[in-house]
Length: 243
Image (cartoon, rainbow, N blue to C red; front, side, top):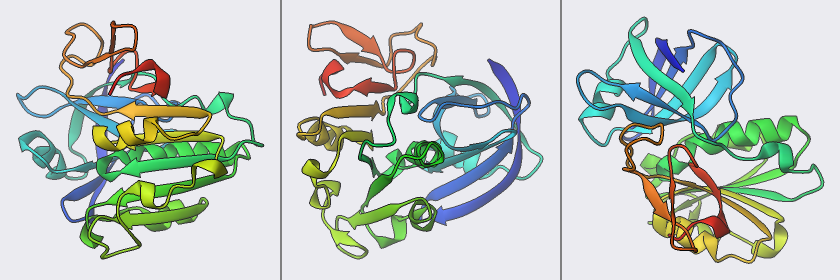
């Protein structure tokens, strides 16, 4: 679905990280874990995960890592964005029972889609715990927002904030029934091996078209085939993909 987004607000939430709140042209409920493909100037569209949805308002959190995201971070209220989406398949929150123990694990820019996921799970009566991993104290964002929803642990690689180390330093696999994760591939690969019964991983791949036509974002499967991150994912069961 193609639509025009109108910027409502913009703010820095951490070093090199921006929160952009936009008004949807067509208000709707959006499953957590899906993404929007945003056009920035003459450049290719950029896949940006959705951090929060409030009917007609949609919030993006992203790091400025190139020309495209730098241009997004420079937008001002009333500017418009050509958007395609929401796209992809998100986290299966409807399949999660309130009695199950859920942990959400995010690394860096993999944190944003977990916020809306946790919001929707908590609204359904599910008790959740979040573990958020960052490089250093200045890169930490949305800690208070997650804390308002449930127990939240922040880790930093250099130990300048929270628990020292990677997210696995705070993970207790025996305490959870369901793992929902998003972040860099090395982190997901480690989480894929954790002894938790139900594991869902949101994969971050470079994308071209965003709708499954160009095969630029394929991921291998255990059977030797391939799945498309944009249209088959970005969320997969841990056993469905080879990382």
